[in-house]
Image 1: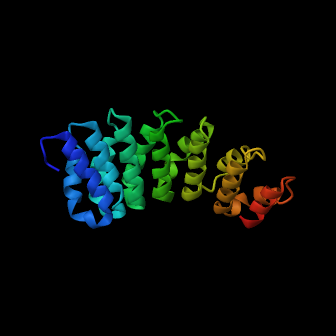
Image 2 (image 1 turned 90 degrees about the vertical axis):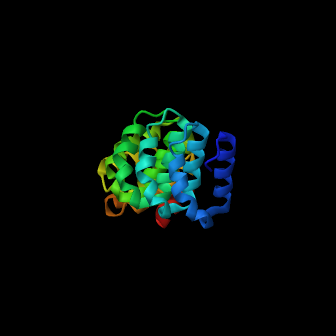
Image 3 (image 1 turned 120 degrees about the horizontal axis):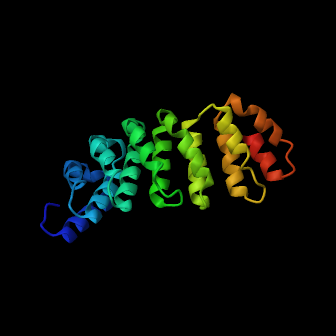
Length: 212
């Protein structure tokens, strides 16, 4: 891991990621490698830290710093690692939100940032307006991630419910089912909207609304 060869450092980090949680003793060195001079090593170190989940909490400050990295791959892997840490990474919300606002909404980095905010949960509430913007992404994958994150953060806000309901489309049942599922997680404020869907002309949406 401390080899002079970036190739060897990268391969060593990859091997640790494959070992998984049993490689926990290497966490301190992986945190050091988040500052490696090579982009691919910094990205690999964050990717490896992801497998340790909350046990990688000591990496939070460095992962937050790497959200500003010049490399999209490094930014993306740092966001994913923060998401894997979960609610304990709530200190990352302000920076994740700010950086998300500058990302290509169709890119993988933006997707990982949205996912991370969802994994952090209700403490990511300040990021909800930015996540809603992701609903306009050209890629369905990004839009689905945004809906999923809103379901995890659970903002009981009429505007959010309106935004979700406006994107229900029987022609896109994958997206519509995810929206209905998320509306179900938003509780009482979404009951009226869900009640209206029980009589929807599309049978699958009716069933999804009843289940929600």
